[in-house]
Length: 469
Image (tube, rainbow, N blue to C red; front, side, top):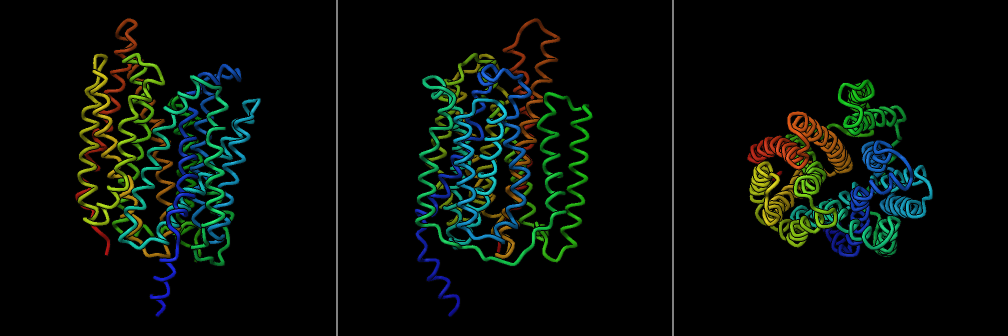
């Protein structure tokens, strides 16, 4: 009888407007994550700051996500769905408006942190709602659309921002997102119900401090490594302190009756497998979204906006096919989608690694299409299968863990791969005279060769994927 009542209750959810409110908020946050990157050079001149300082507009965003996402696991158990949603949207709106009117660099940086805080709540909340209102046999399609949002936001950010910079001022990179946030707010107020179970949980201050130092230290250390160098005391110190704090945090969680982040999720093998695959996927994907435009602008000598247009077909095709990929996951299971996806990604990196200064633009377009199709198949499907492997009471913790892993993997991936790219480029230039395009191509080839090795590891891991009971 209780089961019948729950089924009826689930059927009463207006899933389309609920998902519209959450997905639009997530898209704006992820769009903002990369959209400003293309304007950093101009902003450095406008605010009269150096490259390292202006880079904090991107680093600060990642750092905030890395620090706050782990905390959302316990916040989703302490506060209602609507309270969490309104907090996320309010932070996004405040951050966006402050960024759009910022007259000085310090205010723009603070606004970026506030924006990131909104996204740190919105992403885990969206996944939690999906896993609450959709039955297991329909989660793949919903997560497929979320995968579309997670790919389309960062991928379209530079393209749209490039168009805005060509026609308007940088302020409009923020103003243009305001109507979408207002749409999300209105739909959320009208349609989003409280779907989570509120528990009497206390927030352990020591756990929050250890989590902040741990994830913040690791992300910060890797983020500044490109400028400071891997031998820098700041870099090594931040990473070592961060790892030590994470170890203490993990030990404390296992000994607490009501942990801030329930690490018992790691006793499920399919969850652990999914976490490894997600780390590799985000490490490769976010670094690729930085390195590939650098290659096209430095080796192929293409303008920033044209670069965005070349990458657009792959991103748009992925957007179109994402719901279908999710439906295939629901119908045929994880192996049928994830294994071909990892193979496509590996093929994409194998082709990227061969790119040079004479590579035809159509080859870049075709390879990027292969890559985005593969990532689209892997991204949402792995996340869905990973969380499906957990009991319902572990969903908030599992979501917080996977979202944190993804953000940390992205920050580390960008820092490590850009550092490797720069190192190879420098050594190439030292051996040859003023051949920057060839040096950039050599750096790109090395980076994508490393990514290929990681992609092959993901192919092997995907063979062990199976549908949870």
